[in-house]
Length: 205
Image (spheres, rainbow, N blue to C red):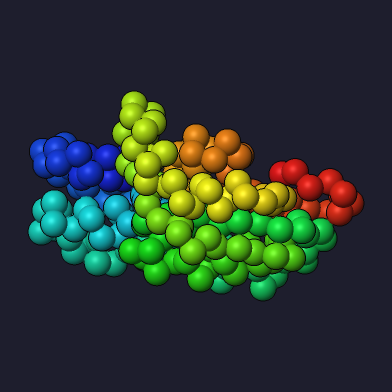
């Protein structure tokens, strides 16, 4: 079920209202009436379900939404998984791309915490900012991302990193385009770092 963010970001209010109410009603069932946390895989979708849907909800669904605990997967991994995992191998270095949604949600520290479990050196470029991919705009207008990330990309490509990490697939695609490097989710890096049976030399997820 769509989180409604794509409708919200394009200003399609009627579609936004339909999807906002639909996802909250579905989430009420998924979470057994709010008893289970709803862990959301992409930070932009977390922001959408946790905050952006609220103005578009019916009064009844707004009451349901108030009972939901919406948790970004980064926060869940940092707070619920890390304390119970054993790191088997680490990367030498990783560069991070915090997304706009992570900043709105206040999740940047969780991104760093998960990355620091996976890599000996973790770097956030000083000029890291919005990648301007904007859901699908970067697919159609690559120059938007190239312009928005010019300084960040210059830093990323100025040296070698063992991993290029974020936690939102479309932003990762945008950074792939901007830097020519392969960005992937820090959660994949965590899975690999804690996977039994592989040696340190095996550094790819």
